[in-house]
Length: 99
Image 1 (cartoon, one colour):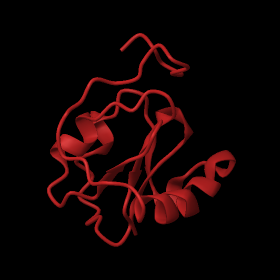
Image 2 (cartoon, helix red, strand yellow; image 1 turned 180 degrees about the horizontal axis):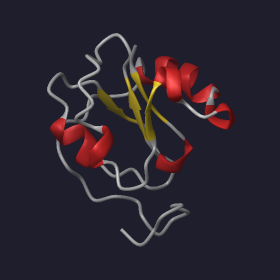
Image 3 (cartoon, one colour; image 1 turned 90 degrees about the horizontal axis):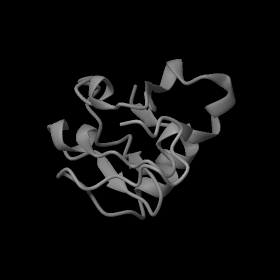
Image 4 (cartoon, helix red, strand yellow; image 1 turned 120 degrees about the horizontal axis):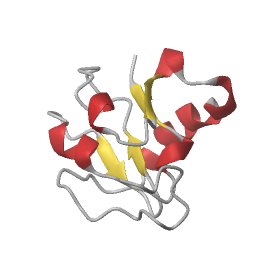
């Protein structure tokens, strides 16, 4: 099992989740984050840190976001690791822009 970042992260890119990851599984894409499934240790530390509820275990990803499982696997391989909190992209299409 691995955790997966899904659609609510797009154009938000909060990074609190990456900052608590003990194994540096998060990768920074242009408009969202991804989780490298071969690095993720399923510790669940990231999920409660996501203010837009974009992170799911791969077996719990809602059906409308199933494609994000493959997207994380593919795009995480070509994106740099992120371990620190950065300014989010909120207000640029974020589903929950009040954060």
